[in-house]
View (tube, one colour):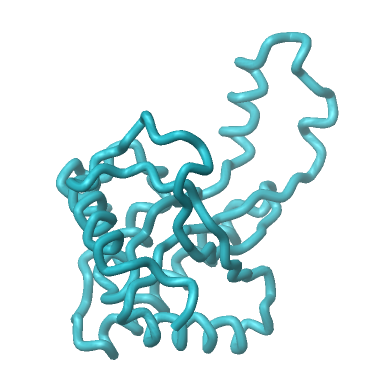
Length: 184
């Protein structure tokens, strides 16, 4: 497998994720929590970033709070946004990539994307953030998986998240992990 992190970096990212889990996913977009809970049970990957996009209400609230000189009338025009998670792959990631490959083929790539990227390494040995890491000092390989949606189609977007979560649950079950209880 290419574009993977070392065992040491994988271990540090796993410690970081355990801190996020132990903290009750505080600060994570609510629409991402179930997806992240599922992903954190997959051997061979560690999530490092996520975004659930923004609903029309969230966009409007942001617009209301923006300084007057930053407000734009075209705000209410149809817009696209993205739901995605970024993960680092370790030595046991092949089954997950096979799962993603199957998902992409079955969907006809309808809205889904998978991209290789790099991020700045900014973690201490215990998984805590290192806010003093200079930008570009040391990068590490990651993957971004997600989909594009129209903000006004919020219901369909939520259905797509639930469908993705169900597919991840099935993958975990096939891998012998069992069923994961959702947070409500």
